[in-house]
Length: 357
Image (cartoon, rainbow, N blue to C red; front, side, top):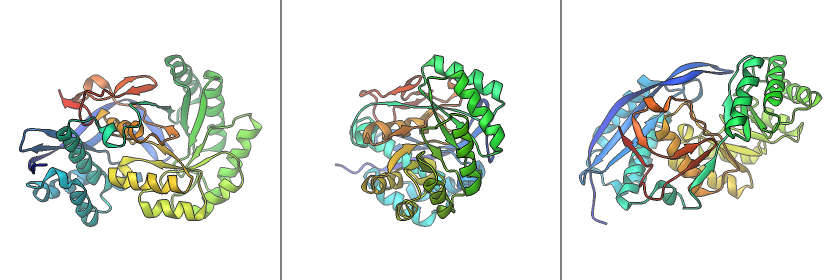
């Protein structure tokens, strides 16, 4: 292939309103404050990438992500787009902690490269399929609101609902009972976002059992660093345990395998970047650990990239890629077609499929 150089790199904020505040055990978000990368090739093709920092999770905020991205511009300009892996490897060595910024660059490079090849991104990831079904998250809200939201989501066609826990056991049980009452036909997953101690998590599981609640899986019940504590929880329940914040890198995934502390690994592009996410998936599959995929608070661009990964690789047992921004206010057109709870990817849209409005 003839060399195709990166002619221009543009970095800018990406600010979006949420449909409503998003509450989890570690805090509340009222808006999306992300960063957008645009790479322009010398043949005119543009690739887009998004950084979605969430300081309590990945240690970044919008300001730090923008600063990191701006410091990378001169390095990226002039490079051949086919060298995207080498570019990503260099940036990973220099900016290891700034994962959302690196993810945005990888996303923009791979989006542009797929457009050069004139293929949709799901084919780049393996071409296993072009559809994905997601759950939808009900955050930490009062039981009456949870019940109302659950009933609405069930009517819209969702078959699996997720809720955040990890604050107070009695409140979490009340919310789960309300969701079960509002959507009795839906499966439920729960995510503590590191909110419990190991003993609290086991007590919570016992209380769920007493109330006839059995979730499909229990995500990150304890601190990300406490793999022994997660193994303790896993050993005291038959509910599948998912490692989320415990896995940012391939080395983290290997530690989860070695300790036997989880049944699932939750991949998020904003924890690992795209290339490392593929490596983590390979480790999990080789160890017979199931895969799920999740997201931060992202626009249709980053969500779309994750959907392409799910559909193209075809190895994810659970998908948690629910949109929370207001679609009409997004700066992008195209991308995955979303009719709850299904995403469908067009074979005729190269790359992620998003274009600027």
